[in-house]
Amino acid sequence: MPPVLAELDDGVLTLTLNRPDKRNPISELDMIEALVTALQEADADIGVRAVILTGAGSAFSSGGDIKKMAAGGGLRDALPAQTRRNYRTGIQRLPLLFQALEVPVIAAVNGPAIGAGCDLTCMCDIRIASENAKFAESFVKIGIVPGDGGAWLLQRIVGVSKATEMTLTGAVIDANEALACGLVSRVVPADQLMDTARTIARQIADNPPHAVRMAKRLIRQAQESSLGAILDMSAAMQALAHATDDHDEAVTAFGERRPPSFTGR
Image (cartoon, rainbow, N blue to C red):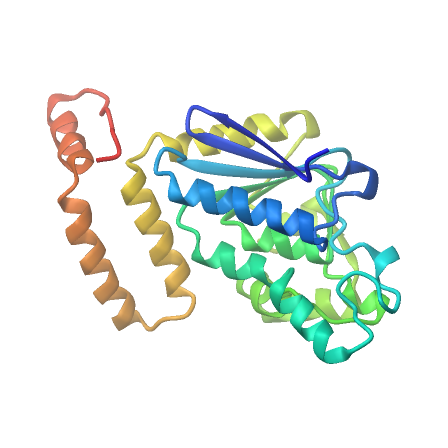
């Protein structure tokens, strides 16, 4: 079976991690390649207005495949210098890609998101959780560190103290605790998860796509830039937004008291 299933419906692309028998690990190269390809294609297509990322079966993602972490297995090479290269050309491609994406990505966390699976949710722009979801930054439990950028990602979402607690204890938190610390923005019953994700995706998709993508880029860039730099970038992007047909349509529709019709131009 393909490692990632893709379904496009009226501008909303749903990507499903498709290794349910292994609880959807993301450390293997075929999974990484499939995710990278699907997301790059979505980002290049202005007709894709939003992406939903979820997992097949009962788990969102178990992160790495522990069975392949023995010497010579998976990313671990007999030569440490090659292990370093394996991380750089493997799983570390994902946080760099997500940081560069302009298309919005919603994580619909259907079950446990453990280790790199937890960090994968942090790479997304919006996280909603099923009541069955659990999260753990659990690398220390197996004697390793977050090799996928988790030390950078998690603290920007839940704050330094909570991120440090999660990272150094490796403890599992449930969906309600994830909501309380800001790791997710909503918790819903399991049978409502995908409908809720699609509703949010549809609300995003109904807006002018260039404005949405530029607004997302500003949010991402603001994680690393000064206020002055963001103001300069905002002014430049605002000039581009003002020049779109969709902006003119929004202003006209407001004056005529009718719903706007956006074309992505």
